[in-house]
Length: 47
Picture 1 (cartoon, rainbow, N blue to C red):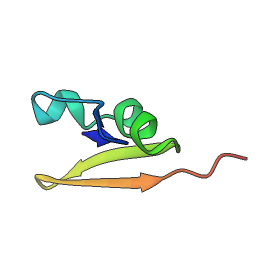
Picture 2 (picture 1 turned 90 degrees about the vertical axis):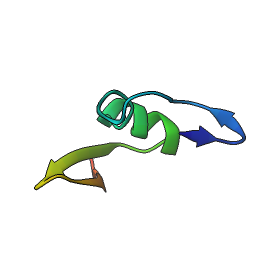
Picture 3 (picture 1 turned 120 degrees about the horizontal axis):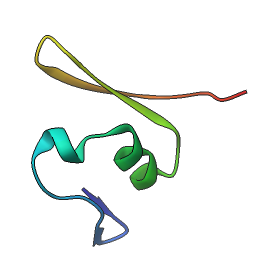
């Protein structure tokens, strides 16, 4: 993953595409799911 021209994550997809990794990259709370072999990420609203 790249944020502002800097690599923020690299490696096996299962280790890189995590809630924590994507949240840090996008500076937003994100949840990552794998459903039927496909990846999905959703922004999380915190109250």
